[in-house]
Structure formats: structure tokens, C-alpha cells
Length: 225
Image 1 (cartoon, helix red, strand yellow):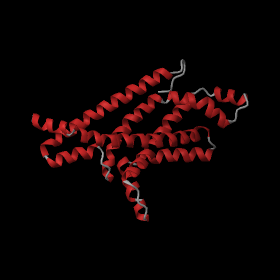
Image 2 (cartoon, rainbow, N blue to C red; image 1 turned 90 degrees about the horizontal axis):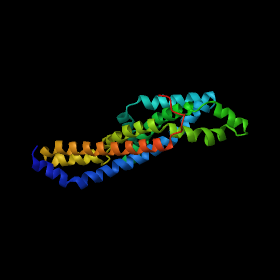
Image 3 (cartoon, rainbow, N blue to C red; image 1 turned 60 degrees about the vertical axis):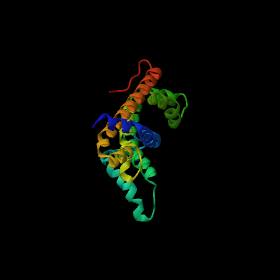
Image 4 (tube, rainbow, N blue to C red; image 1 turned 135 degrees about the horizontal axis):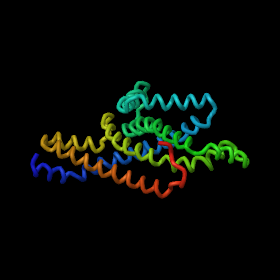
């Protein structure tokens, strides 16, 4: 691994960044899906009737128990058995998004439970329905409290996007592998460069979320650790 190899990898940086843009698109898609589903299942688990609470808890347990790579393969090969073709990118977003939703549901559940129970009683006493109380009183506070846990999930799923190569998505790891397949000595510099890119993205994302958490912090109200 000489300086020449490093220079060749850095000359190919635009190719790696192109692959990284696919990872970021995956990240946006799976986090959005995970956020929506996670929020719904968290509310059901905390405030829903008993049958829905059990279903929400079961959903979360199932998708937290299956390895991400297995979810990807099931989402990719499963529908094909019934004649349904799913694009690799879509399969990756669905599989990783469902996995993320299970973890985000637990983050939001903890945040909802950290909001004092008296606020629900006060909202109901003012004439709000249970749904209105959750939507207008409890959720705004819970979302603020969930930022710390959500930052951890961001760091995890950012790395998980590299698993999409298993179903044929041309993301940054596949681009790095292409470089190594053309010239074997470029393999290690390419992977180290990818590692540095992910370190930078993780730091930037966590820094931004940390700043947002401080800005939106509610004095006297903190999530349970």
C-alpha cells in the first residue's frame, strides 16, 4: 500500500461519493419509514387497547430479533417467489425501515412514558379526546425527549445502509469493492477512505442532533435513561 495507491483512490473519490449519495438516499427513506411506523406503534403500545398493545409489542419484538441481512434477503427473494419484483433499492428501504421502526417504536415509547401521566389527565379534563391529548399535548414533548435515543438510531442505521450491497444496490461499499477488483492493492485504501467518510457523516449527524436536542430541551423534563 504505497502513496501511489492512495492517490489513485483519492482520484476515484467522486465515484465513492456517488455511491455514498445512494447510502444517504437509503438513510432518508428508511428513517422516514421507521419514524412513521415507529411513532404509530409506540402510541398503540402505550395508549392503545390491550389487543393493539400486544400486537405493537409483538411487531417490535419480531423485527428487533431478526438480523438485518436476513430481513434484506427475505424482502428481496420473498416477493419474487410470488411473481412480484421489487427493485433492490426499494427492498433495502423496506427491510431496513421495518427494522428501524421496531427500534424507533421503543425510543418513542420510552419518551411517551417519560411525560408525566398527569398531563394526560389534565388534557382530558379540559375536554380533549384521548387522540387529541396524545397528538397535541404528549407527542410534542415526547418527540423532544426522544432526540437522544434517535441520535443513536441514526448512527446505527447509517452503517446499516452498507448492507444493501447484498441485494445489488450500488452503494459506497460496492463502489469500493469495484476499485479493489480492478487493482487489488487499492482495496485497503478504498475501504479506509469509506470508513473515514462514515466517521465524518456520523460525527456531523450526531453533532446536529445534539445541537437540536439542546435547543428544544424542556427544562425540568428529561427522558428516563
